[in-house]
Image (tube, rainbow, N blue to C red; front, top):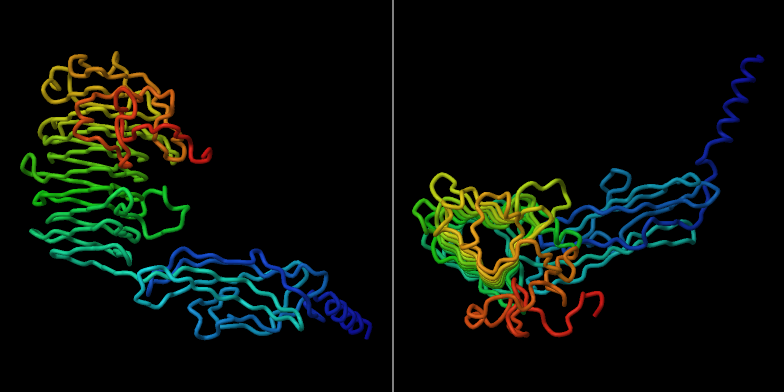
Length: 462
């Protein structure tokens, strides 16, 4: 009898200690009052966001109902504590406890070019207490390409183009991207050009080719897609006022016959790429008023013959994701011979002691490598290929003094050695910089892609 009494008392004591017993009504607290989503492309689900519903009271809390304010017609979807639901009733939270609520969203095609705001709320009812967490997303209708091959095509400003898997420009065909066109690539997606790629952007409306993770925090994150491969049968490629970012290798171009394929890059930015921004083997390339920056290996790699001109270009590299060993600009023979490289009115700089490497001797580069009126960071005593007759009016130790390199602002400041140090003849042919600003503004043009304008300051100082 005594043992039975002990058991009954123990059970009653445990019931009295139940943290969920006698739950009452009260306010619900939240880890965030609003959940924001990246731009969500039509028919493609968003990433999943989460928040917590918290009982900050001293007693157990009974939540009568959790549901989407938009009901079954809402584009948002709920998962509460790991269970996909449209809503949930009679949820009890112990004092200080919380539950996780996961939310994603799918937008139906609307046919509109501009993004459309999509909102809803997750409603929590506890007796007479009602709490809400606002859900906000921008839905964007798109043109979707999934492992596609295109012939002659014209892509335009408006709805963005989203590539899953691969996109191939067929042999003999030309894909033209007009000013303002946006192309977003999903994870591991790529573009292969067997025909021709022509991007006809402008400074006011550049062509953008980037990751489909469009949130601001991903703008400078590399390695989100593979990049653009231009094959040896391709000709007539042009990148005009184009930004290519977030790839593994932004552009790779390979030739079997020396000088084919060919590529012209003007007024463009190739940056935030895991390996390189430009890898060329045996191709003919002309780069003018362009920026190459922020890669894990050589930002530009040239080999196997062909030729490459850099005129009023900025090549600059720092890498915060690990230890970088390769210079900004690498030039080598590859499996055949050195390319012909001309560096005119350009800056090659970065965080390494030397940011230009040539896999050849001083004698071998004669007639192959030439630089004039430029800043090239290198140790002339140890590199083995330095030839002062081939590097005319070149500064080798100067700090370029960009306005705000940490925020990818490569304009020169007032004390920069780039200012008024470039040759005049090229400026006669190219009187505007990467931003379509006039050059020169001083007695001589400035070295690099950016011509300093009167009164320019850091963006935060404006």
